[in-house]
Amino acid sequence: MTYCLAIAVEQGLVFASDSRTHAGVDQVSIYSKMHKYARAGERNLVVLSAGNLATTQGVVRRLDRDWFDGVEPSLATAPTLEDAAEYLGDVSVALQRRSVEQAAQHSGLAVEATFIIGGQVKGQAPGIYLVYPQGNFITASPLHPFLQIGEAKYGKPILDRIVSRQLPLDRAATCALISIDSTMRSNLSVGPPVELLSYERDSLEPGYYHAFEAQDPYFASLRDAWRDGLQQLFDQLPAPPLDPASSTTR
Amino acid sequence: MTYCLAIAVEQGLVFASDSRTHAGVDQVSIYSKMHKYARAGERNLVVLSAGNLATTQGVVRRLDRDWFDGVEPSLATAPTLEDAAEYLGDVSVALQRRSVEQAAQHSGLAVEATFIIGGQVKGQAPGIYLVYPQGNFITASPLHPFLQIGEAKYGKPILDRIVSRQLPLDRAATCALISIDSTMRSNLSVGPPVELLSYERDSLEPGYYHAFEAQDPYFASLRDAWRDGLQQLFDQLPAPPLDPASSTTR
Image (cartoon, rainbow over all chains, first blue to last red; front, side):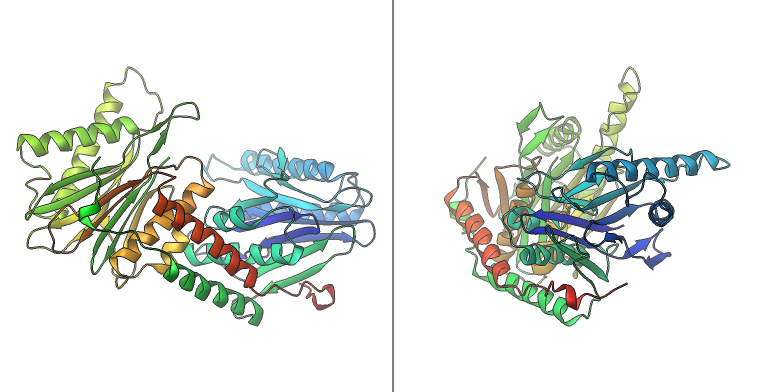
């Protein structure tokens, strides 16, 4: 599996993704799921991918080729983020359809893929979009300013508690890393390195990018502080009475 | 959906369950998912249920009837916890099969149900078992001393971090409540009241039971302490640099 997320706060955008892929338990690999398309001063787009690896790689190859060849439409020319999301959805659906149709027989294999695309085009507001396997897409809302794809449930509680539009950009990045760490702790199919990209609103620059290995000093200190802090916090919580005499009956 | 869990520590057992059921979004109800079978000094068993409500209610009706009518096998006479788990699995499979076979046509409706059964029979060690819809079952392990059914992912990270066999019984109960609270916070299909039962090893008594409504003073204070503590802990975490100059390239 995979876990990727994007957060849209007032100061900008944060993208984060794990790097583990697997087909069954005996084909586990490391692949980047974060793809960057930047033209300084004009546009900065990031694509996160989850799902069938042949589909996601095929889609990214096509996005790259269209970007560099200057064909239309492409991420280089899409007038708005919505147009970019629609183009990404079209590429994804076409590739999935091709995989199903050209197969010699119906294999039942799921070729679906899900994407997050976000960033900013000059003159427009920054934004994040989730593109479904069907090619349609949604955006985040001011009250729910994040999107997740892949193994999203383990890392959702901390996002639900912490993330708001007003959260500073560096705290949003911290929360994204904690959300991925919690997921890696509970699910073997999500693993390092963890890629992080933060984009400052209206900068139209590629922003900050780093791939955190498990032993990265900052990432390790963050994980340790969170683990020890949770333990201490838990130890201070009030326990229920557990006195049979105070039991209620149903 | 549903979220139920059981934890087996050295001092005893903890069972916890939410109470929300729904068929679609327009049939949301409150049902207990915790079913208690106690004979003081002889045995104390608890059953938690998740899945199709007609199946789980049918299974519990049958467990109740067999218990009171003194027929064999039943939870009153199962010589061991494993026998009790096997009996529960047989009852569940028979009921599911009946629902599918007597239907006038194939509806595609899932009639599956999953259960946790645990407790202690006199002269034996206490234990917890997860009974699959297929009627087979597993037990917890010393290194993974908890079992979950239903919407299990949101509440798993805190269990993974906190729960060990050595955890005191009241702390295990605290952790179970936190795990359910995190799930309720992130998933609308899991809701109060939260039922909690703690059983002290070798007591062979019903133990402590309480159904916590959302506004229960202890449960509210626990939720508030956890929420505020998480926020404070998060605020103290080191943030990543986010300096584009310190970016790495891939």
